[in-house]
Image 1 (cartoon, one colour):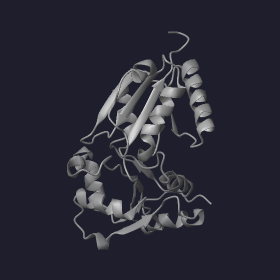
Image 2 (cartoon, one colour):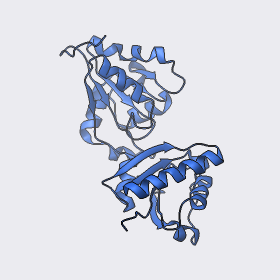
Image 3 (cartoon, rainbow, N blue to C red):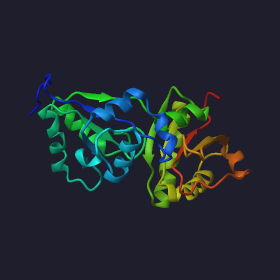
Image 4 (cartoon, rainbow, N blue to C red):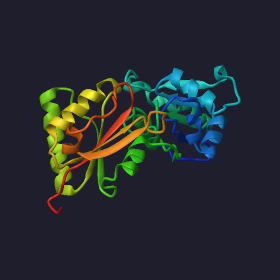
Length: 248
């Protein structure tokens, strides 16, 4: 049953957090977001330990023990998600935080946003760092038509098939494709990309965005094969590629 929004119901605030855990990365969070974080007592987070560090970094005036942090991750039973919104019906705003960057994008927080809409709770997205947007901005690839494909299959044969499908779509739609991988598999994934994609396809690798080891380079697959690059292992990275279209 959908409950209609009224002024006594709190909001679900989508709170972006820094992309890295360096001490100075709190500077990338806008002041209005920092203010709202410091005014909020109820949070839904992917990992409580990480969230406590972020909330402390952003200067919350209350002791962390006085805040309510509920976890929403891959281990959360679906039947428990709706209860995470209960504070809103007591008039409290709820802050939703991801592990890094913007919540609800490649993130289990999307399930909470879905339930908030179904329950008539206002959802308010806040401005902050997004690795997808930052990487696309820096790539030099098509920024008007793009698609985020998330993770590709781990199985080698299925992975190659999926990458070829994405490249074909990129070619026909003149569209940039964005994909990610877990940090410890980044180097192997880059090798797979170089072995799979067409020589003329342009590939951008964006490593550790906003961090001290930030590195963004776009080359054709041929150029990548002929050059060396720093290791990506252990760093968050984004991979973007655009196939040469039939119109080029």
